[in-house]
Image (cartoon, rainbow, N blue to C red):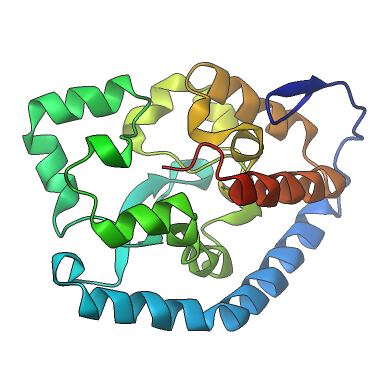
Length: 220
């Protein structure tokens, strides 16, 4: 099974070969280097906007702890789209945190007082995700894989299975509708990728992610 734009499609995908991990890592390194080189003007542009906009002044990057391969924790990079110390403010506000958990560990920008004006643009366009190419280059993540989760989300998954692969910057869940799809369906979709992973499937997912970003589907 494969999900794209909410439509179910029956496909046959061969099991990954023994050389698949080598090809996948090589692809990750080459693509992340190219992306960081080609998108370097974006880094400069976001930095300039942070400098100009008073409400968004602070560090360029936001680093959040996520759980990766074999349960190893790492700092996932994003362009900062919230006020400084946003995570602490979330945990301190019990009502806001309850709403965050109930909404599948996310908050819509219009419901989240921590999101800055520039942050709304970055999130809607998915530009805030670009620094994750640094994580890919470091080997914390892959270009394609299940979305890296925070520790609290692990209970939604078959943990042993989820943590048997590297998390990805792009995944089947995002190609299927991103934040429009919550738990438990999100976990089922991510598990399906692990069962069917191969290079051809990865390429299909990358294309699906670009389509989702272009449509702005489920981005917040």
